[in-house]
Image (cartoon, rainbow, N blue to C red):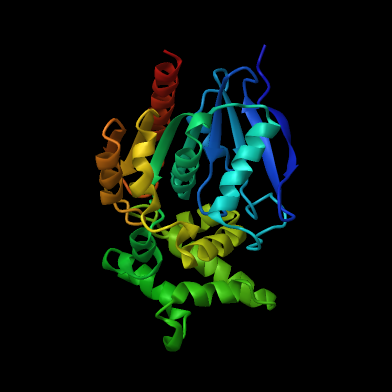
Length: 313
């Protein structure tokens, strides 16, 4: 008899008028895994994410962070900060009566997963990371303040072309202002261009057709607005927060997969974290920010199973 896939879902009211969408997928008695999505703002609704887990072995909690995707209010930046997101995770785990989970986080999800684990190590069985983003000023500067122009000058020039010369010292602030505008057409245009910029550099080759396909799958309006909001404020984290506090995770099993040609999150970020957490299993893949394909899916499933086995011993 086939196990149910989504067996629990709904909205969880948290603080400041926000309500988080969540769903539990897989085996109700399986090993608990919390999927921490990227962005910020992308949400967890893509069916691709489920390919990384074993529905007969795992209970995976997919949820949308404040303002993201199906959570309410949509794309809201009000009271939307990293400390608030950390508290939301605790509230969600309490609601689901889970003492501990394995965290799975990619890109921004890796930032939030590590921040949460540093502050709540007693609620974390282990951490699976991909495409590490440290969320510090250097990482933000590289992604959205011009560092990418050395690899994708054409993509950067397109992104910058919508910003007046007087505002180009801080294009993020200009984009965010437009994405929060009362003018619907302005909001739509700048949300699209922000997301187009990101999707155009997630892999070594991103033809127009594939970029538009990804944009259709994404909740790009919440992705763009919340990502700009977080990037403008250096992810609401103290200076070098993750690297300075990573040693608090010495007893937590951690795995990280990172693309050697990831231009959004340069691979040196992964190595800097490895130096702070020597026991972390770091694997470099040949690829960019995303490495699509069945081989990646198999690698992730194998490593998640290995990590769960290590935790259970």
